[in-house]
Length: 433
Image (cartoon, helix red, strand yellow):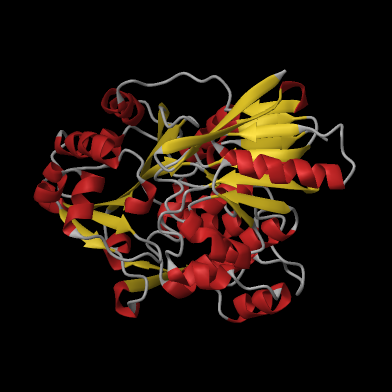
């Protein structure tokens, strides 16, 4: 009996037929409740917070307030929940002119005016002062402490000088920090570039030649130096309140968590893991994976999040088939120029000497690709670069499955197994030990 495997790619799908009895897991996330009204959910959350007083009791009239928001690369419902926060502040006498929106660009570029409108909503752009964080401007940041790992924490002055600081964002699975959201709004969100890189370099193995640090991976917080350094840095600032969204793998709102910057976020992480963390008893010989289509597979830089999670479902040396359209395959160039590198030891040594996040993502993704037979279903114009990156390019999932079957036959595997991950960046296979 055959079963159709359907994966999102770009704005469409690609599919193939596989033996149904070979599929051991079809991962879509666990059942979860859905909030239909983000505005109402936000209002409930900020009035019934976790670990601190309600927002209206935290901020007083006359105080300056900095609200840190995610940039356009991390759309998380800011345009819906931000007006709720601003209205709540207004209800206790906080004036618009006392509010500054700080775009947490991290090491990304500043927004255009049009992008501000997409992220914040036109009304908020007209009403409030907006600061685009620039991590590369040393005059924009001020040092507020040194972490136990020696990281000099320098943050945007607009945030440090505010009477009250509110963090916003989304709790997500993150392939280095364990989870996104929470403290990431501060570090790297509004930190100086040297602070960011001093933190992010923990993602490299402590020993030269070790590759990526196994303590810095998806869903890991305990003993994760990447995460722990962020928490220390954020604690120096000690933000006054947090609002984070939590989405299901199908991108539906599960909840809004609000309150203490660490405790409320940790509750969001626990709840996300209940939805997205999928216990598995065994890894598969073949994994079919997708980011779910556009815009998550717009380029390979974003698309490699598919590999970061799906590798947990794949046997060492197995076959990983990813469907990623990658219309802008080479963007950003700082990533693609690194991803084609083949000397991994030299790659690692160069990262240690001059760390960049895009370079590390390329490094970690190549380590994954090199550890399996990697097949990529993508646009034909991407085939040359795909081959340079030690992957086998295909135009359709059918073609990829034919190549995989030939590989299985070559290995003498007739009792092979298959796992399907149609929303790989948003689901996390957890191998039960």
